[in-house]
Amino acid sequence: MRARTVILLLLILAGCSPAPPPGKRLELDQLRGQWVLINYWATWCKPCRQEIPELNALASQYPEVAVLGVNFDGSLGEQLAQEVREMGIAFPVLEEDPAAALGVERPAVLPTTLVIDPQGLLRPALVGPQTLASLALASGQKKPAQGAGDSGVAHEN
Image (cartoon, rainbow, N blue to C red; front, side):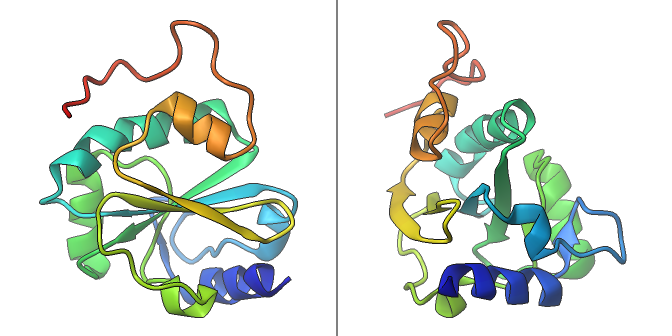
């Protein structure tokens, strides 16, 4: 319950980019009963750049999962919008870091994805670049069909 309340407050207070449209805020009712993944990224983070297409694929292929981003460097306004475009992010990005409000420490490693289940409970965080398949499984979804397990992005170890 606490996580849902916190997310509601964060989403009401925080601007999102690139969606929803300017002047609109995500409301708790839109996320109620959904898995929520909050991904921390930065433009200088090579593994983040590898993971963004996987998160975009999750957001488009699994509409029952809310994917949100957080710029690790705290960019705002036009700078944030520019970085979102540069990274090719197609999911909403919060302008405020929700870590403290969620009662978790800010990630020390990028990329990191916080996972919140439909009951509003924090699940174990995902650390390091993920694939579509690992993101789907972490968010309670069926594994993508064979050959659709990732977006085709090559991952370096």
